[in-house]
Length: 403
View 1 (cartoon, rainbow, N blue to C red):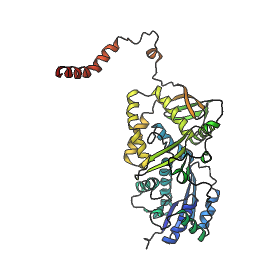
View 2 (view 1 turned 180 degrees about the vertical axis):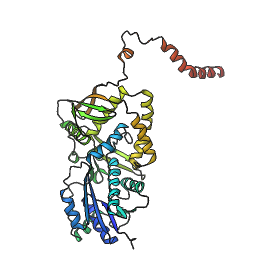
View 3 (view 1 turned 90 degrees about the vertical axis):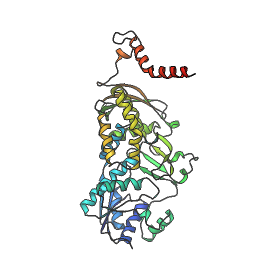
View 4 (view 1 turned 30 degrees about the vertical axis):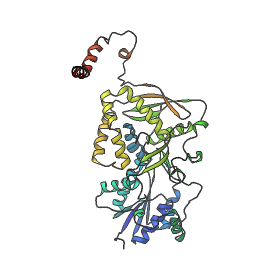
């Protein structure tokens, strides 16, 4: 018999899984269920959510527009770090989960709920991301993970449960894969993509055209940064969410940001995912370009050495951990002088940096020029090389003496 629960806050999308979960929670725990849906830029109509949730049994429905918060407080901090998981994944889904969980816990407090629930499966990363975030906010919260409890182990059984309870679910066999979308990206996995040898069919892509079908004429854009964050495109100041949406449009138009990855999940298995991150791909290239002229070498190298660990923390779900807070403070400290303008060319799947400039630039033409100058004595390089070669010379002399 299920342990007594009075009220649950459910992370609710209105799709098959969470619609079934809503009714299953009510039947199994004889409890009230409050649903929470977040608009993170998935470009889905949410007007139907409230009516559907209440008809399925929800006692209250929350629908929050978190797009600006998502980009400003989650996407931008990670892009200050140039973070990328296993060299390719720009962490789109990983960043959405802690924000959803944080707001879910806030609602649990408002509603006096004693439990929270989500629709993540027992095989994936999302269950870990949700639950680590829940427990970071309340170590005593009751967590209900239906996929680890119920006997509805297949999509067919979910459909049968939905039909039995009169729950309308928009499911079609025309898309034999699952997808997750927000302002940063859209991901595709499962179904026909489970075989890593299978090429992703062109019709699955949503945010971008095929590079082969992209315009034959390149497009040039300029992105302005202040203290590591983008603030304007082509001279127009834009809010974080509006700016990322515009970069998605520009990148998608030119076929930029597609990635086909076999990644290592936190739970231990490998998983194949196909991603579209057009705006994020442009943003990372531009950010690295402005850093190249404004960031001290040793600061950059130290920060770069931490990128794999930083990305791993985000991917694994440790967004609210003390080590993540520490690393973010350090990352943000490196961005004090990362301000300037970057010019890029978008063309058939590529994003090429054409120029960069900044009032904070450390680049000096007088020192870097191959022409004559009066600020650098090339003779000084001789002593520099000899000092750096000293240990190598000693090793060489030792080997000669022993041979």
